[in-house]
Length: 196
Image (cartoon, rainbow, N blue to C red; front, side, top):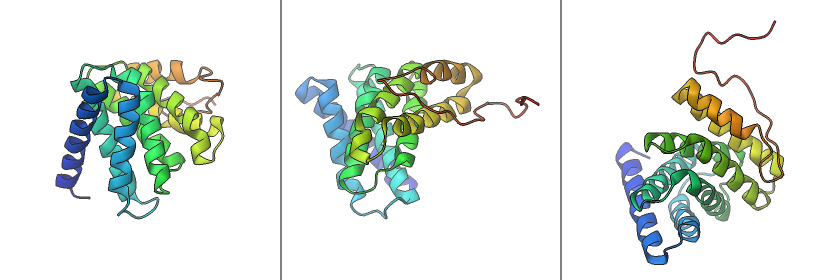
């Protein structure tokens, strides 16, 4: 997908989410349906589990984050619904997997940060949405939570040490009855110390 196509997908998703939320008035239902619909339509022409498919997911999630923000919604709170919509949509066309969960969670954290939102709320919402949708993917709640937590933590580590600590504090807790297994390193600096 070219840069122009990606930009168009972000804008199209944003406008679709805004229209859906304004039409329904319910951020949760409108966001899940809008994200899912766009992904089903857009992913039909991509190769399964390809970089192209993940790019479509990332662009769609980015557009959804901007759409929720445009209507005055809290992006951190909406992260769960964006994740559920992304997993549902990618699952309908056979392109969902744990890498999809990780990419969505990372995009949710980055997008929330860029819009001045709470990254720990976005991370929690991403993990909750992944757990809620785990059965649709045929994975366990812990595997889904782990993929989302690691994606969120990776993105937070790219933002700052403060963001990383905020996200780590959230994703190391039991969320919706599941516990994530974190993989290191997520340090934003190259001089991180390792125990001897």
